[in-house]
Image (cartoon, rainbow, N blue to C red; front, side, top):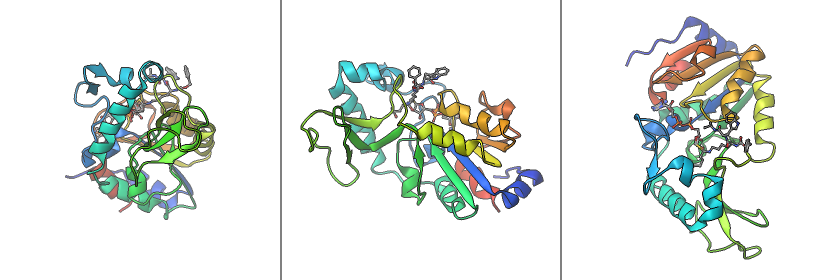
Length: 241
Ligand code: BJW
C-alpha cells in the first residue's frame, strides 16, 4: 500500500534528538488483539461493556469476575505475536539520543518485540499485584497464584482500571519526556482516555512536531502537525526509510 509521508517528517525523523512515542490498542490490532472501541462498537464481556468490567468499582464488587475477564484475555494473548509496527518502534530506540515509548497497552507486545524501558501507563496483564502489600507477581512464565505468596491476601490484575490512579510517577515521567521531545508520534489510540491523551498536547505546546498514525481521525488529529491515515503495521515501518 502506498503511504504518503511528508518530506518534512522524513527530515525531522533524520534530525530528531528526543523522540516520544505514545501507543494505544490500535498498534496491536494487526497482531489480532481486539481494540476497545474499534469496529463501530465497544468491547463487551458477558454482556458487560468493558468500562464496567474493567472498572475499579467492579474490582471492589466482584474480584473473581474481573479475574475471569483477565484470565480470558491472557489466554487470547498467549498465541499472539508482535507485528511490524512493534518491531519498528523497538528499532527506533537505537536511532535517537533519547527515546521514550509510552504505551496504554497492557498486552506486553512492545516488550516481546524488544522494546526496553517501556512506560506502561495502564499496567500489564501479565502481572498481578497484592491488594494489600502491593507486591507484584509475574504471570508470564507461570500460572496465577491463588493468593499473594508474600502475605496471603488477595491478588488483583496489575492494570489500571477506570477510575483508578495511574502507577505512581508514570504519567509525570511521561509528561516530562513529552515536554522535552522534538518529535512525537501518536499511534493507534482513540485519544479518549485521560491523562494519556494529554501527552501529545504537552509535546505540541513545548514545540515538538506531532504526528498521528491511525486509520481514523481522533480528537487529537487537529492538534497534530501531520496525520498519516493508515494501519500502524503498514505505516510505521515506512517512516524511517
Ligand atoms: C489502529 C489500527 C491499526 C485500529 N493501526 N490504529 C479528564 C477528562 C475526562 C475524564 C477524565 C479525565 N481525567 C481522568 C478521567 C477519567 C478517566 C477517563 O479518561 N475517562 C474518559 C473515557 C472519559 N480516566 C481514568 O479513569 C484514568 N485514571 C485517572 O485519571 O486517575 C485519576 C482520577 C481518578 C478518579 C477520578 C478522576 C481522576 C485511568 C484510565 C485507565 C484506562 N484503563 C483502560 C483499561 C485497562 C484494563 C483493560 O485492559 O481492560 O485502558 S480503558 C482502555 O482505554 C484501556 C486503554 O489503554 C485505554 C485507551 O484506549 P486506546 O488504546 O486508545 O484504544 P481504543 O480502542 O479506544 O482505540 C483504538 C484506536 O486504534 C482507534 O482510534 C482505532 O481507529 C485505531 N486503530 N486499528 C493503527 N491497525
